[in-house]
Image (cartoon, rainbow, N blue to C red; front, side, top):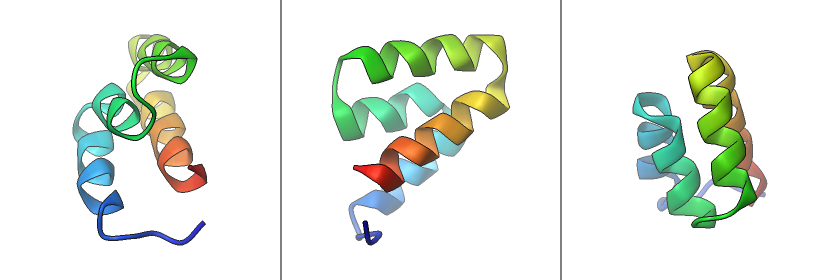
Length: 57
């Protein structure tokens, strides 16, 4: 999927606090829970997952 202007704030949020970027893209759901767990286990996996979700959807 191409990156749009609305994805830029999501990427900024994903770098600062990954669950916020996922929440902005997908809302409350399984992806948000997975991202919260990944962020708790390690910040970098949470950022990678958030960027993947933003790019994919």
